[in-house]
Length: 313
Image 1 (cartoon, rainbow, N blue to C red):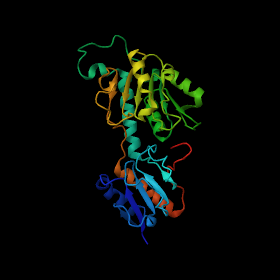
Image 2 (image 1 turned 120 degrees about the horizontal axis):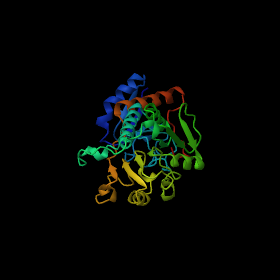
Image 3 (image 1 turned 180 degrees about the horizontal axis):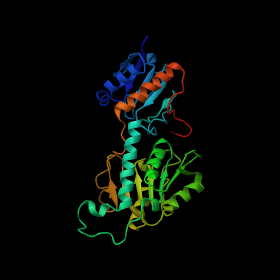
Image 4 (image 1 turned 180 degrees about the vertical axis):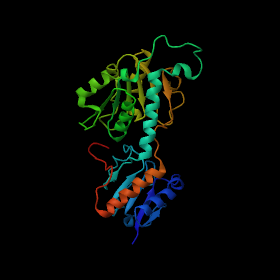
């Protein structure tokens, strides 16, 4: 008897995911009926594929569901739903990781080489007065050293940047330096000429980069944030930029998206705004992760990327 999978990620996404999800399930040897409309019998559904803003607010009727499989890496908009008691898996897929590595590497190199002064041709023929440092002389810190953070750290280290990772709890990171906890955070920030933010958004990480911690950065440090907007106190960042303590901030994520017209970030000369493009979910690779998790659920194996409700990710 085929499984029943409810694609509850919104009608807009089904044309993008449908073909890939069917192919991925077939490749995993999973026979499934995929529903795209609200089920007449929620208790007959085996798995839910979900995205925030999707088709379900109350998960209680889905009594047979073995897992809710999120299409986004972030789960902050769903993990607090009190009706969601089924196992919840976040999305970690190869395409998303590659995209994040490319975005982070490009912007770290951009800040390292000071390319902004030349990009629009506004500086004329005005070479830098001093030879720029080599990558080996430019320390980079990555806050958030999970799979994405470590992948970015390895790519930067391969270019000879001295990379320090930081996570809230200890992590084994072969070949990379990783600090943890409050004391490790201060040490990681004080050495960060370029800072990359890849933390999940939880109660503990909201406004992590406040005025006090921004002051720990070396003067002129650059910030690249493709993680979550609320990791940074916006007012504190603007003050640090105006004072010249932070040299530049490249921001891909914001408290409100799209970033509202008239927000100070749009016009600030030391802020680059990108429209949440760093690492979107790639349907072809994400569908494979979903299908593998369904196969795992059916064969008694542990789910990939299972969310720890207590930690929030």
